[in-house]
Length: 270
Length: 270
Image (cartoon, rainbow over all chains, first blue to last red; front, top):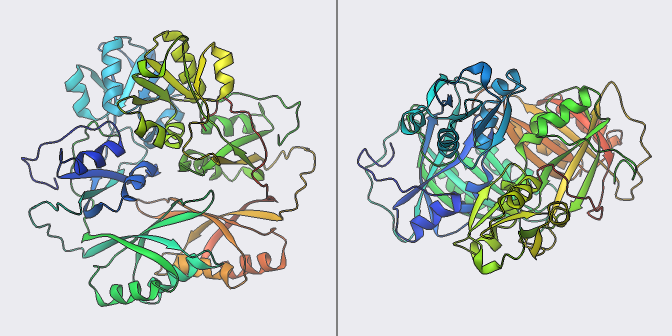
């Protein structure tokens, strides 16, 4: 993974807690899921990125596969409820629609759902979680790969404290660089169009645009990813041009990662 | 509310179920929360809008207030856990940070959390839910209005089946009209900038832009709201101009509603 095989993981209950673990030196980096290719963006992770103490130092794009787990000897036809994290349920929407009246129940995370199913010992209740949770909690894998699409992926951003950048192995990649920006437009008509034109006019590819709530109701902040390094000539030129239309903060610039990294689903919501 | 005081509500477990209730004639309209002014967009609602069977016939913007509920005679200082829907927890993020180590636990909806707290009868466990849930489940209101901002609001879209538009009282409003569009850009650099320019060049205000996952990983569909009626000259002209750069579907055109409507929080996630 990103930090090398001997990295020690620190389980956190929610996204805010992962950020605090970095600021309080319990961890060197936090790995935030920002978007799933089926379920979409993860708002709570963007909340963490708002804190100017953090720098984005990398990204990880990982395939995500889900299993249906239950206490042995449960059978498919006995199941009445299935528990999992809402984002995992969203990734298995087609499976759940095809297996109604099995009822989907949101749980605070996938591994927690598996643990609860193991404790319940009720063959009518299943969990959707990663394969690893079956072994950990003594559950049977009734079905594998129940996500809506076999190419299901989650993109994670790796963040560190600005004042304490970790000494990590150099990340090599031949897919070029990506730069993450936080942009607040001036409150004038067409302001967002002007921001996007700055990049389009310089042939810079925008790979992600996320609107998040701003300071007042129905005002917005934008998180924008551009496929270029922050010190590219066209990017530097864009940042200068943006000064006229928006407030811009560079969250980080890092090598783009193709979707080949395998990440073991952990206790973090996916 | 939108449908008049004598409307009968049909409780639904999730967003997909509200859409099915309309298609299966169990309900005339569905009311989908699309965005909260603190927590941001609600992805599951946008999934429902993808179905071309639906038409957006209106919007409702409602103030949202949350209470901290527990079994009497629970006291603030005894609380160790608080249950609620993740979006409600997100709306009370500041309260939860200030009351750590009280642990926030995601529940499938706010009223369900209140019901569970009432059943548990454990004075260490509270729920975040609307005031109405206190009376319904015999809980004490320990604190009111614990949302991060007193102007917390949720915007709902009202949808109906295209083949069975309901005969509702005419919605009057002096804030003009709004039109919701679903837009798929061609896969060329600067495509989104070209879409936004179409509206900016005609001085049409874009009030909302939501990117949702497209057909393949990391491709996108856009949901765009424009503050104009679909039969305004500038809007018709925009839709013609969009033909060159994107596939566009009009989801609906309806009177804009200011944030004054009071909606009673129901079993639906907020």
